[in-house]
Every structure is written in C-alpha cells, then in structure tokens.
Image (cartoon, rainbow, N blue to C red; front, side, top):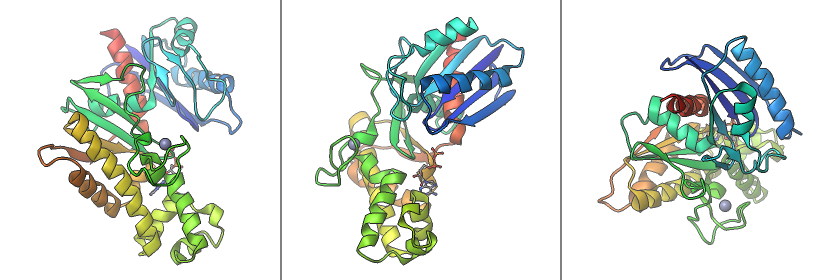
Length: 313
Ligand code: ADP
Ligand code: ZN
C-alpha cells in the first residue's frame, strides 16, 4: 500500500512515497519554490515532483503538510503568509479529484507535531507540544494521543503569545511576541540595530562589515566565538521562548515539548537558557521535558504520512 506525502513549505516544496508501515522513503524529491511564486506555480511544481516520485505507481492515500492556516476538517487552505493566491483553495478536494484517492491536509506545525509523535522524539508521549523555531515560530498539539487544532485550526500559535508587553513591535502589530524575540530574522534585525551603537565586533567581522548579511546563524556563530553582544542577543531570544514554554506548561500541562527548526541549532547556551527560563516560569508542581526534534526537515513529510495512514484505518 503506497502513501504519498506532500510538503508545501514557505520556500520549499517536497514530495515522497513510502509503503504504509515502512520508515524509509521509496521516492523523494524536492524543489525550491521560486521567489515570485503563487499558488498555481506551486501546484504545478508539486505535480511534477509527484510524477517523479510516483513514476507509474498509484498511491492509496495522500497526506499533506501546508505552511499556513488550514481548515483541516474540509482540507481547505485559508491562506499562505509567504505565497500569494492560496486564499480558500480546496487543496484536499483538488488532490482527491486529480489522483482519485482520499487526501488529508493540515497546517505544517500540526503535521510536524504528529510526525514527531508517531515516529520521532515524541513516541509514547500522549500529551506533547511541538514548536518550530526558524524564520517564524509556530506550534502544534498532540493531546490525549491526537492532534488538537482548536475551534478554527489556530491552536498552537505560540509565536504570537506576548511575553514582554513593553518589548519590540512584531509583524502582527503587538509587542514582545515569542516570535519577535526568538525567530532567526528578528534576532538578526536586533543585531543590526545594536551594531549601529557599536560593539559586536565578531558579528561585524563575520559579515565583512555588511550588516545586511547578518542572520540568526551569524549571531549564534558570533556567540560561540565569545562575542558578548551576540551572546546577549541569543540569550534574550532563548529567554522569550522559555517564558512562552513555561506559560504553556502552566496552562495545558503537556509532558513533553519537542523543539525543531534551524534556530534550535544555536548551541548549548541557547538550550540552557530555554530550560532555565521555562522551569522558572512554570509552577514547581508542573513537570515537563524539553527535547530536540528527531525528524529534522522531514518532520512535516512524516506527519503527512501519518495523516494518510489514518485515512486507511
Ligand atoms: P529553514 O529552516 O526554513 O530551511 P533557514 O535554514 O534559512 O530556513 O533558517 C531559518 C532561520 O534560522 C534563519 O533566520 C537562520 O538565520 C536561522 N538559523 C539557521 N541556523 C541557525 C543557527 N545555527 N543558530 C541560530 N539561528 C539559525
Ligand atoms: Zn506577533
């Protein structure tokens, strides 16, 4: 029984096929989404990826991870923050009609949470929260062993939880959101601003004096090399996420937090501050663990496999 798994990311598209129950891809292909892409160019690229991974085989079900809000009940995409033209696209229906098999579509953080729960760092934890810390910050729930999406599929938006009401302004208009403090691009933006005032020599040298080239990765490299400003920026970023995690622990009491996304590679210091801050923010009676994701970039694809396997039950 073949399963087709699709990942519509903000900047990347991927397709893979696997035998139900197996844990190794039979076929895998990915492509960058072009800078000026829209929903129909993304769909066109995805069709050719599907053709290349399926060859002449037919899948029994299709699971889909989409990088944006989705109505998972109907499988309709609500919109994409990165790619235009996705407003109210009935993606599940399109795929079911085109390939003649059942499909299931959900938001990428929810799908990655399901992937980590079934096959990754969250196995045997029935109550977990998955957080991705990358270009943005998002989250997805597994509660009582099942995805929990909230009334409108918007549950898990830890990125726009306010942890510092007097903090810097976020793209959503509020101040001091977790994403505003912890995401890679915002860490870079704050570094640029601080560098105008001096300091941060290591950061400056790493980008040859061109501040436009600063990224979250550059900040964490500078911190590892002992740059004080970079260390402060990284700690503030980890502090913001740690407060968010502690608050979530108090509110919902999951056993496990699984952290994925590129910023989680920021190093030991970053992880330490997260653990310490989350522990301090949560009540002493509230217990939890915080662990790195196990599936890496493939978490949404493996979650999509789980969505499809559930269709075959
Ligand atoms: P993606 O994870 O979506 O493939 P990138 O690899 O470009 O995207 O990374 C997303 C963000 O994470 C960028 O802002 C990047 O600077 C940041 N980032 C990547 N690696 C690290 C790292 N080791 N430490 C801190 N931030 C990082
Ligand atoms: Zn925000």
